[in-house]
Every structure is written in C-alpha cells, then in structure tokens.
Image 1: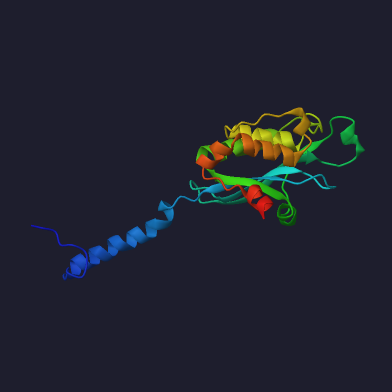
Image 2 (image 1 turned 60 degrees about the vertical axis):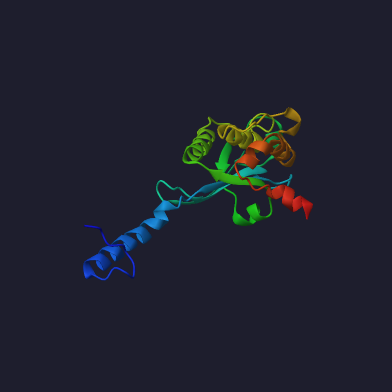
Length: 197
C-alpha cells in the first residue's frame, strides 16, 4: 500500500494530522538547525588617557548552549600612573564600555568555530590569572594581549618590538600578514573600509 503524500491531495484526517505534526516539529527545530555564531572583532585606539588601547570584542551566541555573548577584553594597568614607565605594575583584563568601543577603530571581524571560541576564552583566562605585577609597558601590555589572542586562533602574530606600543600599527600589520587567511574565513575588513571613505 502506497503512503499518501502530505499536501492538498491528502484528504484523510489521519494523514492531515500527521502532516501537521511533522511540519510543526520541523518549524520548532529550525532555530536549533541554524548555527548561532560568535564573531570576534579586533580593535585599536590610538594613545589617549584611557586604556586599553588594543582589545577584542565577542558578539553572538554559543551554538552549544544558546548563551548570548556580548563581551570585550583588553589588558591594562589597574592604575594608570607614571609607574608604568618604570617597570611592572598590577595589571588586569578588563571590558571596554560601549562608548569606548564606538570611539575605537575596528580592524576586522570574523566568525569563530566552537573550538576557536574556547581557545580565545582560554587565552583570556590565562591573562586573568597572571601573577602580579603583570602589566609591563615594554613586555606585557594590551598589544601583546591581542597578539596572544590572534596566536591562539592560529594567526601569524609576530610581536616586532617597534610596534608593541603602537596598537593601530600592530593591528594593521596583523591584518596584512593574515589577509589571505582572514579572507578565506569571510572576514570583514572594517578598518580598510573606514579608511577608504
């Protein structure tokens, strides 16, 4: 016996009911079928009297848990004073306020896999757990932090000494050295677009 198709030609109540049930279940499943991606953005801000000067932003949803993510991470001295010019001081991983992010330069962004998201969060946790004093303007600052995040994502993230106090220049180099890799990931090169306007 041939099963009846779901649709207008199917007239029996049992077939119509089964069709509606199957359709309803498919519609309920749709949100979980669409992967919710987390995007990472790399930002810089030229030297001002606020920190951090290089940082990342994570936005989206973890497709394993459905948890919404809207977070930023940068590494800075806990207290900005002339002491940072003399050696190591207390440091911290801190978020940036929305207006600070809006006034900064986004260089590029792309979607992360689950494993990459885990790698980024693990790198952030490592920096949060550094023994104090952890911030050093010459060896362990916000630019080194962003370079470490990039390296955790398997990007080329060299740390040339002349650029490690120049967030924008460092991120421009990071973009240049990884342009092909980023393009293959479908990255948005937002700093290049803004500079072209």
